Length: 231
Image (cartoon, rainbow, N blue to C red):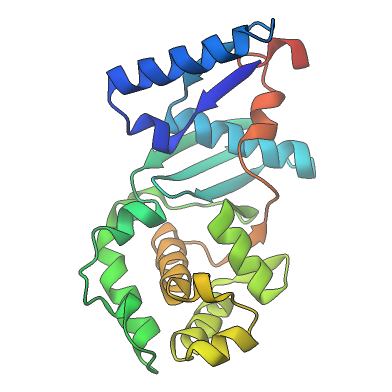
């Protein structure tokens, strides 16, 4: 059994990580199974997400953008090899905590709310600008992207599609959001969700993104350095 810790785990102190890993390993050992418990770097997480898409689609040349709560991973690769992988502390929760309480992203519905929210987010996500994604086959991974693809009911989205739906949802009240199939507990962050990913894609130079299933775990399962028995 191998357990790998990602973004939220990496944010723990060294002592907290050690305590958590020891407790998990001891629990697994009690079952009689050998256990490996460790954290992985953000770059490794990006690499594994890229491999997940390769396993899912058969593509040897593509890019991935994975949005998490704490971090964002980006990986690009050609000819079956990852050429560049990065992880930045620009996840949705991390970025939301840096916005002001009176941010337009969480204000009352209005016609200009989406664009105002996006303008607030662009400087916060600015470090992404140095990692322009050149590949056309770019896949969006993680629960936030899954929510956007579900809302728009497509497997490939242009950034302009996200912008158009974002402007619509940012101007909608609770009743209208419910009519769009957005559950009450998710409505508060809906405008932020769309503006965040529009800003993210703009900074990365991505015009369209394809739907990717899951995240990094399938890539880990196929990687002998993490799961040697699954070759």
